[in-house]
Image (cartoon, helix red, strand yellow):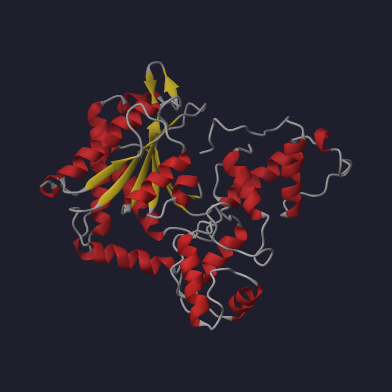
Length: 385
């Protein structure tokens, strides 16, 4: 999910950027000190096999694409990992947004104490500031929204008041119940992957950008017929950045976000459907329980309705999943590089079936357990107005 337009570092590269990456990984304990490289000889630093292995380890733990390549997303995660809670004062600033593992620790502790700091995204935003002010006011601290020494001491001394799993699950489940079981009034952001100059995977005249746009349009139509509202992150020819997509999604105050993609791979055996939700590859740390639930149902619905191989549901901390306030998932609808998947993707009936599977999964997410349907069995016609 790295941005292909950003400069990247990979095996064989040398220079100051490589030295910076090496320093970060040494600091994180993922790489030993280079035995022969002098500290100042940054221009001769080499991206060798040991560095690539350490990068892959970091990506695995952080829920990033494990490719051993340092693009913008991986480098931002490395920069964030440098900060430990207590290293610096934390505050909300529009001109210089604070981002780091120390902010993530603050968010997780606020959530554990019962304060709504929003999705733990490692970014000190307005919701984190409000939660921090609330804690400061409740515990007799200066409610200035700045996490300084006094607040840090208080957070070290206070015990969690929410236990039994991921605390944000309680709010997410409460929001699902209060939203009601029907699709009428539900708002869903649909993100057709790629677009504009970025065509995604291309095979002949077929592009990933065109396929995802077509599937998104079909989902939009079916959701509207069921009384819901869809917001698309781009038009047919548009190509917003990942940050622009996340900002647009957040501005809609939507209930869910679905990002659509089609894969490609050099292996002739690679095919099938996979879904992703916000979380880390280690299985610990922050994550979206509602996103995980929806991702699992969506993967199973697509498999049951299309007979595509099931490539599973996975936790990832990609920007679009992390930076959006609502539960967000990514759906990979098949492999353009595989002849069977490609033939299915080029069939309009298959793309409509994908849209039906999406609608069925969203409907099942809101249904009480007693009213739920067996996977692949939900009849979509009664959902239409």
